[in-house]
Image (cartoon, rainbow over all chains, first blue to last red; front, side, top):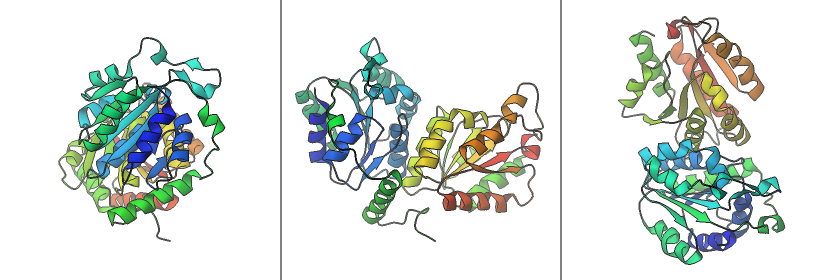
Length: 200
Length: 168
């Protein structure tokens, strides 16, 4: 399965959902495919699911999507235990698992290319709706359809290692600029003031 | 910590606008946990790691909450990565409510905690996180309010380190 194809399908379905991406190749592909103001880039690995969880808890009526990678989830496995107990119904997590630390540029294998099964870990942590997706038809049928459900979902999407993200121009949006665009979008769509911004 | 001080601390957090608390309990300030959990005006989330507690609180802040993270000072070390990347780099206000084990004013200090305490302030300074050390209840509510205002103004984490009377 090709990650970019999955993201294309997902981008076509995003309307007012909030999308949190971590620092990995998929964030470059996603920023190229989606100019949605509800996109939030968290600058480093291992933090996106936590931030998405906080957003989902703060805005329980709003669907929140986290786009993450195998290396990033392995860095923050504690998130799974917390989510397995909280089970926020408005949170969907897509882990694009290519089995390597692609950013290392030596394609060093992650644990998921060995014996580690992230979906099984998630189920063991209490996330009952955790599945491994291996082909694009399954992605369409289950991972995309999950957007319509009101249930914590965790999809481990097995994708080929690809280098497309290195050919796409990197986004030129600064982290702080992206944060303020995101927060202003939230203020506009939620009809409320986010307390920490905008008062000089 | 005396129960009255715990009540004042939680009330001070509420009065300062805190309505979302992530936490890992520790020994010095743990009386605040049931008070926060029982308060309908505060949402409380138990985390599995301080690193996670910081990221969840940051997400809640971006979603419109006024968030605090309650942790032991060992949690500063554990969460330094997310404090730097999410708190500082992304610029998200967070109040850190920290049990300051092993500091000079820690009433239960021992060889178990002293090394942990010795490095807490240098690590905060290294991370560029401003802090205030509280050793008694004098002007507690004012100091908590000042800290929340500082975090919001700085667009980043601000740490309150609790020792002295809070650690007895």
